[in-house]
Length: 300
Image 1 (tube, rainbow, N blue to C red):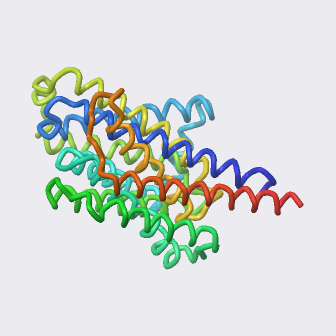
Image 2 (image 1 turned 180 degrees about the vertical axis):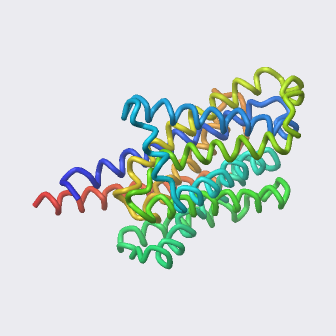
């Protein structure tokens, strides 16, 4: 690993989490969101695939199609797992509060760490383990008094979404030669096909959806795609658990954006949610300083 690579990976994955944190806000602006989940998934999945294809074209030119010739089991599984995460997130957040969905996502580092250990043999560094324990404490604080006020089903689906993303994280580290961006393209395609299948391969349901929902789903697709590009850039340098840990900024930011009056949603979190979010943020900051120290040690 080069001298600045570790810190570079930390920054891009941290930024990916910030990008994704605006997803909850975007969904909250939907009109009767629970009625248009599959139309939303269709537009968002299609947008993600298109954005990634455009990115690959600008990065590699007309030779970008060669990435698709390298697709194997890791890419297909990764695409399915990520599509599951995409779908689960929308279902969960339209069934319950943003806070409940987001702290279900906070399980990602622990799932990724367990699967990464057994599948990839990845050993946790002490700083990562400490950060994960602190983050877990933050999650526990968040849910002590804040009722899982939405349906239990919404919380369970949120956990399924977290599991899907954690498994996707492991698959993109499974084989270094696996084309990571094409895995995201596949996820978008799988999500689009699944949504269109549920809608009976008919465009009529799209006519019924409010126009603002269509624009929001496209915007959400752009947000998710931008975050996944950054996440994939850092994926080859960081173990699965560390990747998922840094993505917890999605949890903290998401709860914050739907709370701030400036955005007009006003989902006011409880005091324990605020304290828990602060603890999670401290865990990520601590990990950042530890990553910086590793980078300094590499240089010396």
